[in-house]
Structure formats: C-alpha cells, structure tokens
Length: 298
Image 1 (cartoon, rainbow, N blue to C red):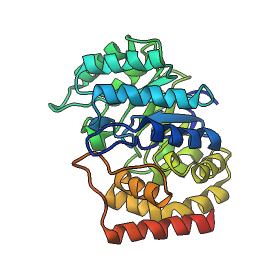
Image 2: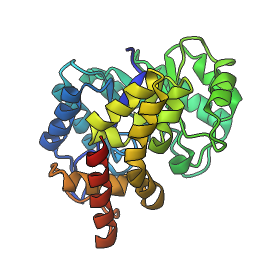
Image 3: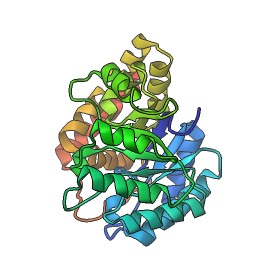
C-alpha cells in the first residue's frame, strides 16, 4: 500500500465542550487503529472536529497522533482553515510534527471562486514537501470543484490524491474514468460517504476515507479488503451488516452517531465541543441495535 490508498480511518478527536483536546485519549484511539492494521490514520478531518478546534489544539492533536502512531501507520493531517495563512501554518506544523501527508478542504464563509480555491491550494501545497490530498466535501464546505479545477490541482507537484464525495448518480466507474482522463497516472482517487464504500472500491477507487473505521476498524477492514479484492458477494454481505448504521449516518449525521458509538464501546470520548450536542435516547437505542446487528453479522 502507498499513502492515500486502502482504508484510511478517521477517528474523533477527543475534546471537552470547550474544544480542549485530550491527547491521552486520542493516543488510545490511534493505538487501536495501528493495532487493527488500517492503511492510514486521518486526524483532524470532519470526524476529527477540526472546524471546532483552535490552532494550538490542532497542533497538540497532530503531535499526539504522530507520536502514538510512532511510524507504524502513516498519519494524514487535516489542515483546512478559513484563511490561507492559517492553513499554511498548520501544514508547516504538521510536517514538523512528523506527519506523512496532508488533507486540505476549501473552508470559507464567503463562497470561494474556482480561481481563489486554486490559489489557496497552491499556497498551502508549496509551504511543505508533504504530499497533499484534496478534500472535496461540498456538504460541509459548500464548495464544488469543477473537473477543470481538479485537473489543475492534480498537476501541482505535491498534490497526490483527492477525497471525493459519493457521486449523485452512484456511477463510480464513469466518474473515475472521467477524472483519471484529466489527472496524472499516479494521482489517487478515493471516496468518503461510508455507505458507498464497498461499491466505490469494487469500481476501482483507490481509497476509502472512513468515518466508521475510526472506531470500528476491524469490521471496516473486512469490508474494505473484500471489496478491493473483487469479492463482490463477501463485500455485499459485510456491507449489509452496516446498513442500520449507514441509515443512522444519513438521517442524523455520522459525527453525532459516532460519538454515541464511542460511548457504547466504552471509549474515552467526552461530549463534543459546543454547540454540538448528543443524540436523544431514542436514537441512542437505535445505535445499540445497529451495533448488535453489526456484531451478529461480522
């Protein structure tokens, strides 16, 4: 495996309601992922609550994750921020901490133009020698990459991959063919959106950037390995075990559900930084049922 391929697990960043990171708890989560054998660990992505943490806490989290991984599993660090200078500083700090790669989302309050996003990515990518993954997540950033922008970014020296949302029509093969026609041969194209993971890997996607693998790595690995090996029947069987959880992700948001999963597993996760809150008792009971369904079938 190379960076930005296979199963990339994105754990929650344990923090209190004021956004102070519990680095000991984060180290526990990272150690679980290393032990499970995931291909990479993505810290400070959307599941890693990067948007709710200030610069100093993000650097503390990066240093703790890299130290816990101890070179055994590559660590990819999210460096998205509202200002280019902030993202650039976070990228430099991640490189100094020993991160293996970067993940950059085009965060903004005022919607960015395609040209503004291109210059943002150029400035951050030129700040370090680390390979970078483009974070295409219109659901949180409200920014949509054109194919032309993806091609322009992919041609930059340190730009190595893109993390794509699930295609609206579900046709991964067509999208992969279209994107690969305009990007370098070694440019990696992977997907997030856990309920489409199996299909995206079977269609030839390079990576699954996984929310669920952050806390349930063994089960996610089984699905990823089956899909990547082309075992459609086994991948379908394993994916069906996740369906109740996927349904909760779609209805209530994967972040809130994963906090509840962590609590049910007895992992060291406090309440999310405010204003994020917990799910209600009815949804929490549904999380229990989803985990029981998963355990019974995996």
